[in-house]
Amino acid sequence: MSKVESRAGGVEFTGVTKRFVTPSGFAMTAIRDINLSVKPGEFCAIVGPTGCGKSTTLTLAAGLESASAGEVRVSGAPVKGITKGASFVFQTDALLPWKQVVDNVALGQLLKGTKKSVAREKARDWLNVVGLTGFENHYPHQLSGGMRKRVALAAALMNEPTMLLMDEPFSALDVQTRAIMSNELLTMWDKLKPSVLFVTHDLEEAIALADKVVVMTVGPGTVKAVFDIDLPRPRGPVQDIRFEPRFLELYHQIWLALREEVEHAYARSAQAGRGAAA
Amino acid sequence: MSAASTSSAVETVPAGTDLATLSKLARDRHAKYVLQVRITQFAVVAVLLGSWEYLSRIGVIDPFFFGSPLGIVERLYEWFRDGTAYGSLWYQIYVTMTEAFLGFLVGVVAGVVLGVALGEVPFLADVLQPFIKAINALPRIVMGSIFVMWLGLGLPSKVVLAALLVFFVVFFNAFQGVRGVDRNYVANARIMGASRLQVVWHVVIPSAMTWIIASLHVALGLAVIGAIVGEFLGAQYGLGLVIATAQNTFDANGVFGAMLLIGLLATGAEALMAIVEKRLLAWRPPASGESGARGI
Image (cartoon, rainbow over all chains, first blue to last red; front, side, top):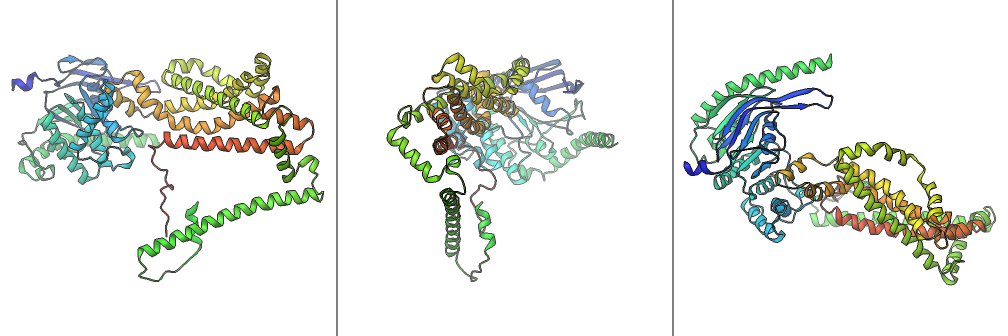
C-alpha cells in the first residue's frame, strides 16, 4: 500500500468552483464546490446528466483552465499551468490528421525533445501493443473509428502518464468496438497504473471499469454521491461482468442517485425549449 | 464528371457474366467515354479557330482589329526567330516570370507570417483590423504607379506590386485558417507539453495550410497580373511592355500572341503548383465523390 501511496498521480479537488463568462457577458457557474479525491493508481469514473460540468472537471485537472475558487492538487502539488504527467483522451479524437499514425503517437516525446528516430521507434512499440502494427504510415482518416481510438490511447499511454484524463472516450464507437476498447484500456491501465478520471454518461461502462463512481448533480454540477465499486479485479471481459448479481445491485443503487439528476436535467432542458419557442 | 457516363446508355448483360468480364466491359465503356470527351473538345477548338480564320479572310471580321489565328502564330514565330523590339522573346519571358515569381514569394511569405501572427495574437488582430480593412478597400493596382515613381522602371517596382496583390489574398486566408484551428488539437498538444511555438509549428500552421494553399491558386494569377500591369505602367523589358507596344502600334496579333504566351506560362505554373499542393496535402481524405468508384 505504501508503495502505491508514494507514487505520483493522486488528484485532490477541494471546494472547487469554476465560472465562465459567456460571449454575451453573463457569468455562469459550470461546477460548484467540488470535493473529490482520487488516489494514485485509482480508476475513477464520473457520471452525471448532460451539461453538469463533467468535462470542466477534467480540464481543471489537466490545467487547461484554472479554478475560480478552491484548489486542485495533482500529485500533491497545486495545479498551475498545464499539469505535468497528464495525458488526455478526447471524445472526438485529437489525432492530427496531417501526421501519420506513428508521428501522432511519437508527438508527445518529440515535444519533450526526444530524437525523432528514438521517438518513432518507441511509438512503433506502442502501436504494436494496441495491435496496429502495419498501420504506422497510414493517415488517421484511413483508419476506422476504433483504430483511431487505439492510436489515441497509444499516444496517451506512451508518455507514461501518472494521471489519465478521459472525456467520454468511447462514446462515438459502436457497441462491440466499445466493449473491446474497454477491455484493452483495463489491460493497459493495469500495466502502468496511472490514476484515471473517466467521464462517461454510460453507467454500465462506469461500473465495469472503475474502482469508484462519482455521481454529479445537474449543472452547476457538484458531487452528489461517491460509490465504491467492490467488484474483484481483474474483472475479465466487460461484456460478461454486466450479468453478475453484484454488478446489477450496484447498478441499481447508483442509478437511483443518477436518475433524479437526469430527470431534473431533462425537465430543465424541456422548459428551456418551451421558453425558447414562446 | 465521369459518373454520368454510364447512366445514359442502358446495356443488358447476359445473366451469369463473371465479374472479370463485367469490369472489363465497364472499363472499355469508360475509356470510350473519355475519348468522346476529348474528340468533342478538340472539335470545339477546331471549329472556333477555323471560323475565326475563315471569317477574317473573307473580311466579315476585320483582321486589323481582331487579328487571326494564323496571324497570331506568324507573329509568335517572328518573335521567337527575330526577337522583339526589346531583345529576344525568351528574355522578355524570363523578366516577367522572375518578377511574378519573386512577387509571389514575398507576398506569400509576408501573408503567411502576418496571418499566423495576427491569428495567434488577438490583441494585435483587434488593433490592426481597421487599418487592414482600409488598405484592402483601396484599389491596390493603382499603387503600381507610385511604385514605378519610387523604384523606377526596373524589376523592384513590379515585384513590390505583385507582392502587394498576393499578400492580401494569402494573409486573409492564413488568418482565417489560424482562427479555425480545432481547439481540441491545441489542447491536446499543450497537455503533451508543447510550448507556444511548438503548437504553432505542429498544429496551427499545418491546420491552416488547407486555407493557405487554397489562396495560392488565386495568388499565382495575381502575381502574374501584378508583373504585367507593372510593366504596362513603365518598364524596359517584359511581356507587359511587349503588349503595350503592340497596342500602341495597333498590332492585334501581337496582343493576342503575348496573351497566349502568358496564358501558357500561367498554366504551367499552375500545374507545378498542383504538384506542390498534392504533396503538402497528401494527408487529406479524398473529398466525397472523388472516391474513384463508378457505378456499373
